[in-house]
Length: 126
Image (cartoon, rainbow, N blue to C red; front, top):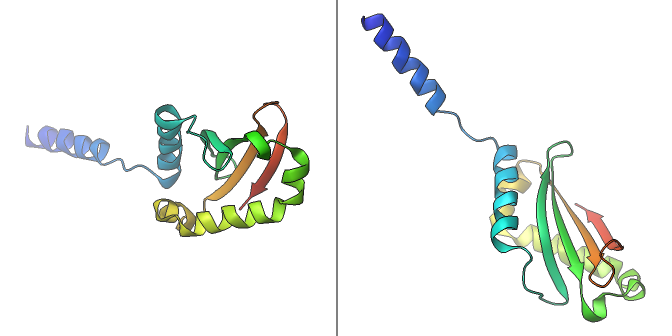
């Protein structure tokens, strides 16, 4: 009887101790963020439409849209480096994603046109 009780308790403790991997956490948090917050309000002519974690590439992908005067391929092309530098700096300074950075998770931004949603205006991976 004691052996059966011990076996049951051991099995329960093993199944109850499943800890979420960083990849599982990233996927869950991306889904929750998208469901609760997206689309975000427009700030600096940019809106976040969704956040997705791609397990195959170990990448958090931010799908965004440029609006108003930033919704112009010529303006985006002329400022690609400034946009990339700003995003990189934001990723480095964001303490909320420090655990992901330390775990080697990559980040990618895919920015679409608000007027023409299928048109990709900017794309950068970090």
